[in-house]
Image (cartoon, rainbow, N blue to C red; front, side):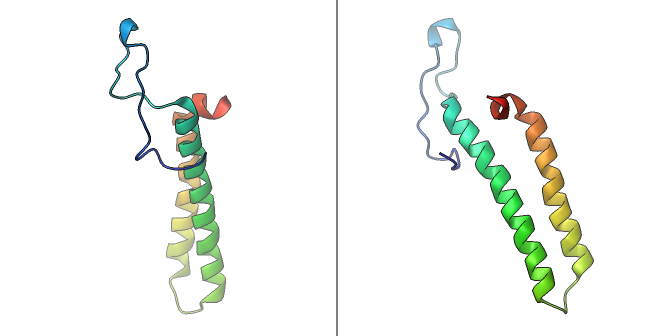
Length: 87
């Protein structure tokens, strides 16, 4: 399910082997959150580009730069969460 981790139930991840029972989320929840974040970035960038086409009196360079920055941030998310996304 692609939704934020806030409010998700944490579970005990092998505390007998040194796992921290206070900070473990299910893998599916983390993967869904990361995929959802990537989708939100894509949608927001797309919406900004549509707004640019609709409105004439706006700072288009600023908004295009912001939209491009959002898409570029996907690169870092994919880098930091590559293990999660590859499964």
